[in-house]
Length: 145
Image 1 (cartoon, rainbow, N blue to C red):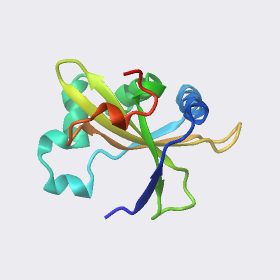
Image 2 (spheres, rainbow, N blue to C red):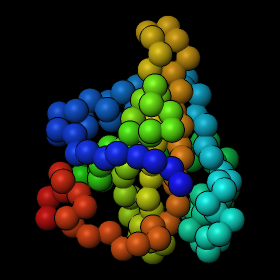
Image 3 (cartoon, one colour):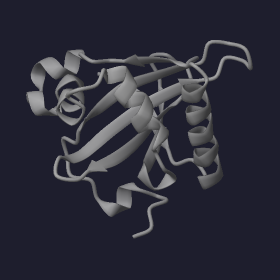
């Protein structure tokens, strides 16, 4: 089991994170997408990263589709920030929810690392799958209800 701690960042910090994410993706960041995860072996196929991306973007490469979709994230879709205790030196991950009309809610967990002004930025997408539990308004600290 992945050990984590969670917190809600300030609105300003989330906005800064989204700017960093967009900057990294617009400036050649390497995007790593965990298409197959161990947890998926015990999960209904509909709730796996591989199925969700193929279902939503059947005619695109996963990396192309995810780069575009991550650039569209907004503060209203932010849920929380997660510290990965297994890799404490890595940057924190952020959790978001995106609604795809006619398809469903998608849970997104992403980490972006800006290495330097000239470095190779990286974006790691751990989760991009249909939500396994219903989202409630209370889960979104900056959503206008």
